[in-house]
Image 1: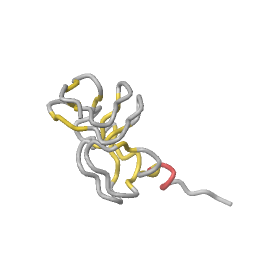
Image 2: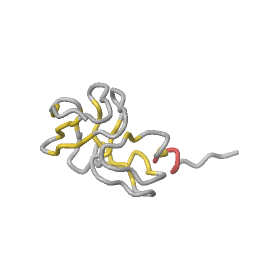
Image 3: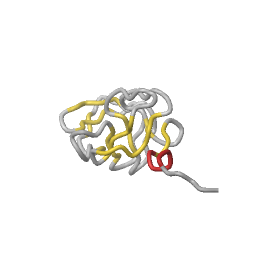
Image 4: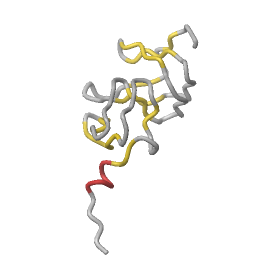
Length: 99
């Protein structure tokens, strides 16, 4: 685990968000400072992808821009990468598809 804390690796866009967006590729074990919150990154988080900044329960909305964009399909720990392996699109879930 790296002991250096980086302030410019991730950004929470809205204070209501439960995720932050990676401003660069972030390696597991990195320590990032997100608006006063120091967080250890658990997974590789690619540039422009999301990471949880607090625990997110299965079934809970993923909030970005202060609005739900996805739903967690499993529990996600703080510092975990948030993507298709643990979340599904809120918009796809709400969209009705006609045959």
